[in-house]
Image (cartoon, rainbow, N blue to C red; front, side, top):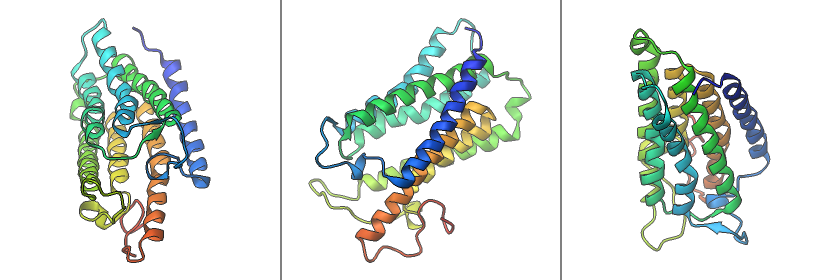
Length: 251
């Protein structure tokens, strides 16, 4: 398959536009999934199944693109694509099966599945068929720094999810204040970790598709960290006043 540069460009611009729209929307209302689900909502999908279905396309689409490529992939292509897929393997087969979250509305699951399918194609197609890799690129400081950021962010994200999962004992339904790790500094440590991941990926690839995805991630889950922060402060009178929403010591 030849590089569909025009399609990748327009789809990446769509990610940027969607991120801006998502940001403005979340300034007014909270996306109704997780703790913000309307108790009277219908057509709910169990949390484990919802996360599995919506995360799977971001893993499956790039894998299919690799398997159906007519020319052998270069080392750079494999490195970046498998880095991208690593995150979604963890989200699809580990996070989704361990989550204790609330059911999600079907429309949220469908929209998230559609987004992950499109983004999986954008990232997979661009890095397989459009990006030009050289031996010099493999020693580039941006690649090294970006991968370090990516794996640091992933470690923060996975560790923070572990803390959240173990806040409540089996059968408990009350919310508790998360502590430990970066939760001692921010309310949205798990969101911060994922943002750092995709910023690192953007630095490593220096590609518009990766940058647009990192931008969308910041716009979509950054405000959610703020909403969680406000939720905790309203619910718990003893919530640590020094703790910020997303960025330690700043915001």
